[in-house]
Length: 89
Image (cartoon, rainbow, N blue to C red):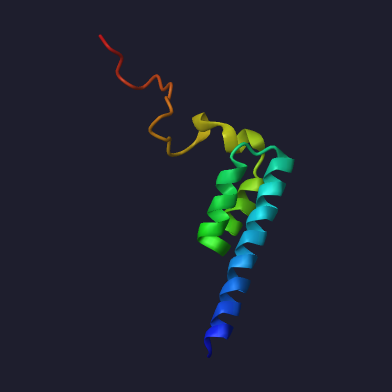
């Protein structure tokens, strides 16, 4: 395979990723997803896996996607108001 073919395939590969990223960005903005730029970046970096993750995320209801209280694993910066934790005495 010559260098022109490799260059051509590379341009096609990058173009597809950029095109998918733009589609994800526009779709996320249309749906009102706050971190649309982050999702577009994930699609560029992780290609198909990122696209599948975004498609799963966009089908989730906003209440499910945004409510950290219902999350099974909480992020470190979120506070959990659990009454079972020992209180400062």
